[in-house]
Image (cartoon, rainbow, N blue to C red):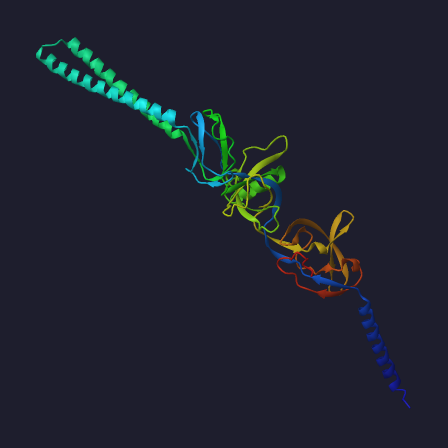
Length: 384
C-alpha cells in the first residue's frame, strides 16, 4: 500500500502530465500560417507609361528637277544605305542642255582670248602714241565683258552638270524604304512629287506622355543627377516592352522632353532613345515603358499575398513572439522585384504572415512556420 507521503507526489506528477498533454492538444488545434521577415534592399522606384515608337529620321524622297521617271532601282520595303541609287529621271534632255552649255563656254573662251589679244596690242600701241587712250579703254571694256561672259558660261555648265546629277536620286539616309509611289513613265514635278519615304531604324525613338505629378518627380531626380529633364533627364534609364511576350525588354535612356506642359492635357511629351541592332522595333509600334522614378533608397518589400484590407485601410498581420496575431496599418508603394514596396508602417524587423491570412485573426494565437523570402519574387509568388 502507498503511504500518505507518496500520494501528493503522485497527484502532482499526474497533474503535470495532464497539463502537458492539454498544452500539446491546444498547440495542435492552433491554425498553421507561414511567416517571414520582409525583404529589405536598395531599390529604385519605376513608373509605367504607354507610348509609340517613332523613327529618329524620316525623309520624303522628292526630285530636285522635273522629267519623266525612267528607272526604279530598289525593292519595296528593302533596307537601303545612304547614297544608294533609288530612281533615275530621263537624262537625255539634261545631257543635251549640258552639251549646249559647254559649247557656249567654248565660244565665250574664244571671245575672251581674242579680247585679251586686242587689249594687249592696243596697250602696246598706246604706249608709243600710235593709238589714243579712248581706244585702249574700249578694248579694256571688251575684255572685261568677255571675262564676264566666260564666268557666266562656266556657271551655266556647272548648273547643267548639277541638273544632270539630280536625275539620279539617291537615298539621303540609311534605313527602310517604303513602296514606290510612282511608276516608271510618269511625270515627276520638281520639288513636289513624293517618290517614296525612308525611315531610320537604329537607333529608334520612343515617345510617351507624362503627367504633371510624376513629371515634377522626374525633374527632381534629374536635378539631383546634375542635369535637366529636357537635356536627357540625368541619364534616366528606361525599359520598353512590346506586345510579343517572348521578346526581352529593350533598354534605353531618356534624351529629350518638350519645353512646356500641354495646358489642355496637363502632360508633357518625353522621348527615350533605344538601340535597335536586330531591327525588331518598328516605327508605329506601341510599347510599355518603365522609367526610373527616384534615386536609390532602402525599402521594405513584402508579397502582395501578405497584404489585407480593413475597410479603406491596408494592413499586414504581424506575429509576436508568443504567436499572437496583431495588425499593422501600412501605406503601399509601387511593385518592384516581384514585391510591394511599403511606404510607411513597417521597419523591416517584423515577422508577418505571408501565407494563410484567412486563418489569422487579430488577437488570436497561431502556429507559425517560418520561411525566408528570396531577394526577388518569382512569378508564382514569393511565399511559395
